[in-house]
Length: 483
Ligand code: FDA
Image (cartoon, rainbow, N blue to C red):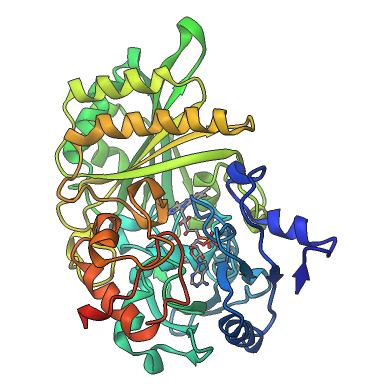
């Protein structure tokens, strides 16, 4: 337990803050940071905080886009799960138990140590914590083949608002449904998850083909949209779009970044048939095993030691603001050109990451888990702007820019509601009021993340945490009149 007087308090507070945007703000700091080693300590912390009217913020990997795992406007403590990160892989039944404080990198590493032909379909950045990631869905290079990370959860242990320890059987199917995509911080503290491992071929192929505007990037992005969700589910091709260069040299760079669950000699004919415009060649491709592909996507060289995946810090840490959209119809070339103009207006690092859906995502009904963005969504867009200078004015300037881009995108993306991904949390979509929030008020942001599943999430919240002990600016509110 660390109080403000402890020399370790500040380093610990900052240790896993992945967005330094608020480091100089006057926001309240936690009264205590607790780093439990045992579940009983979490149960005690919950009961004690209830008695003292304190809010609890749960932190696993600290990647929340809006810092909700370590910031609060009312007096609070942080329960940081840094010491709860054991991983037990069981190849006999192809499952693993993983504690919430473990990172994706630690999980991928543990799987690779046991097997060369198993993996887990979750996010790309190794420092992301399992606790928040699985709570909000979790998508990565295997999403078209196996769905989201949360789709592959079989059981979980959770401490509820009464301090009780529950597993899937004792929590019941409603609560088990809610914690697999309903967003972290609303229903309890998930201590550990039982996940289903997936089989991966011993050799997979990766490629990254980069094109600028003068190399026909606009047409390629347009074409990509018309095939990407229809491709065989072994093939995942995302696009990362960035502004690069300075002055007259400034341009848009599009990187077609792909994982194919098979060998290069199958991939090249497939690409020639389905996406010949990209002109994929053997020298663009790298054959490797699955864990090397994890390294490759994480920004390392495939032959670097896989122990690098155990580093809990993000590779490129700086202040950022993110937003997200889902796309159901191809954006016309004129629309893409308008995006390029806006990306070129910003002087800082900006990027759009387009992750394709289709495949397994089309087979899973919208109500299977709280994540409703399934069939009919061609791809997800994540918008990011990053900066390194401090100061509210600087930060406001970049936030204004990304809001402007988001406004521009309105005609091209999903509407009624304009959908968003909870793991790319965005408080611009709306927040709870400090006192009571009505269902209508919370629906403004809730239906964007969860569409028709929002109502069921509220019903579950009513049942398991009617006093709203677990709460934050975008937690699911309880509404007694809905029962
Ligand atoms: P953090 O600890 O901040 O938790 C996030 C939220 O969940 C908070 O509200 C927190 O209170 C709550 N929470 C945390 N642990 C909990 C627990 N054990 N029980 C209940 N609630 C808990 N996403 C994706 O789908 N694919 C990707 O490839 C990436 N890549 C990526 C890279 C980088 C650099 C960042 C910053 C983020 C991503 N993400 C992502 C988004 C990521 O999935 C999302 O931010 C997760 O919520 C992060 O989980 P953490 O545990 O790290 O965050």
